Length: 128
Image (cartoon, rainbow, N blue to C red; front, side):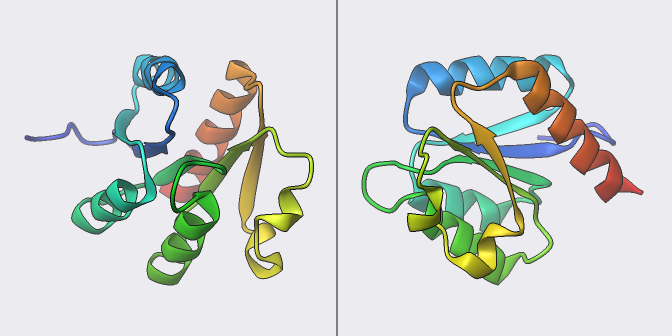
């Protein structure tokens, strides 16, 4: 399956299917290629099989959570931008301090325009 040049791949990791559908549609309409995973194991598999440009992950999921994915992504792909969607006011309990500074936090409920602006900004810097 060929991907047209210039399309950035975003890995969306979220266990709520309505959120997956909504964000996939939003990002797809903006020209991004969206790969989805509903758990950390699927996400890690996709990260190792494909060239991902940005990860957009929920923090709290059943089983291994977003913090496990963040740690894994940081170890394997230290330059990979990671956006964390969270409604947790106490996010520091879930994220290791040395990783927190490398993350973009996206508060829930998600403001779609803010998300798109931040994604475009990070990916345009990455492409230069």
